[in-house]
Image (cartoon, rainbow, N blue to C red):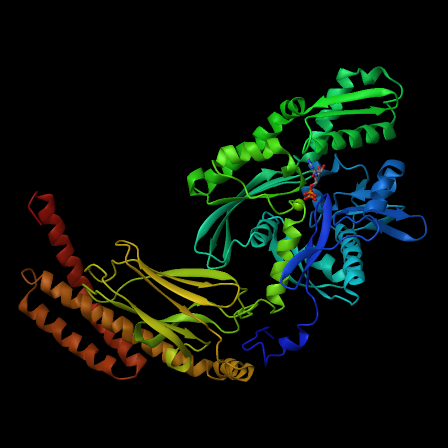
Length: 617
Ligand code: ADP
Ligand code: MG
């Protein structure tokens, strides 16, 4: 059954309001969990190391199963074969998708021949990326439960905007395996925007620049009445802060000729050098020079050298931004805000370059590591019904549409559509020179609007006079996250527009809703008959009008007999369409058509022949 809360004070959700719904950022490099307390989103810290970030790394112990996070991170150096990282890169993927990923991972990704989805072999057992992601989610669940002192069972989890259905489903399944009911999967850039409070105001377009450990994503979002729409995404799945570290390591290896040194050729030495490089990189967030001793060698780097090293990579991210903008058919001036996400956006040089490209100051005052999880927590809080005045609506319980010719219901958003949601359709006029068009909005499953529930109506005025069928009227339905429906109508040729706000479920009880659905099933066949009659009547009306036009325009070429016969068949059809016998109407349509079609052809030939002779038509 649809989860709907009409009145939070009486609704059943009020009873559940005590259970916290958590927000999770399941990252490639790091993951974290957050929740809203007293109206504020906070990320949960580990009580051991006081950090909010949990490295997305798993280590399988000989006997006691998986350890996740910082503890597993350490094993990356000492026991790499049984330590797994970057599982997110494999989520929802088949062997087919895999070639490029496999080469960069240090553990065994295998084709066990049984299924098409990839598996990972650790200590002679096979694990799916979904199972491994579930282990990370379990660790996060335990962490937040320890802090809250109560169990949690519901979550919102974020995914990259470019994730396809299989990857989203795999994320959902991982949640289920971890004992979490995943109420929503939301896009990471959307979550980051929510954390910055973007989305409440009027229509705006924003760019979310996410540079993490191993991946770069740029997303262009349009926000309208709380509905987030991804206009374009771009990025590089193999570009991130880890590459910055590698560039520093390469620089040092050359500078200090480490390839000749025995000390720095071992595997664990490589890891230690990489960690030192990461330390240097982070150092430049506050200092201009770095100096440190490792095994007797003095390692040095200036901030300027670092910026020179990473310039080609940062250039690459800017190219992606340019491409995303062009895909969205936008220019930098169309972007109102830039949101920075991911640990690597702490690098000053990155911020400067992105700001310079978009010619705007970037949003960076929320911790870029936490911003996605914080946004997920805010979305969770909205779903929990804790945000004041927010009408919760997960899905539309009944179809929403408008009345079209003859009182027919034309559904624009079908029932069970997830919200927020946006849909539209084009209509036209049925009468020549029609200046006003009434848009009546209905809710329900029946074919005739009289059997559905009217939610409201408005009139689109001042349509410039045009022949019937020429105006292009776009009707848009937008349901925002709090269940408010906005209906807009716009005549595209002239730009005339009009809109209203409606609360679609206000005042309908679950009982009423059930009755409306049942009604629609029980009356399906009578509805179909009624629809058929109305459609026949609409058709008759249309033909009568166009025949009038035909007679008027071709008065000079038609014989009196022809005109008389057509008029008589017209009046025949007119009286049939006043009744309710659809077969009678259809046969009258047929008779009129049968008689006038050959005449129409004849007239057409005449017109063409005249034209060929160079005469004015
Ligand atoms: P993901 O979204 O891929 O899980 P994160 O957003 O957690 O990744 O980013 C991790 C990256 O951020 C790492 O490469 C890390 O070195 C980098 N990072 C963290 N803090 C800083 C800093 N102060 N300066 C530069 N890079 C940083
Ligand atoms: Mg991330």
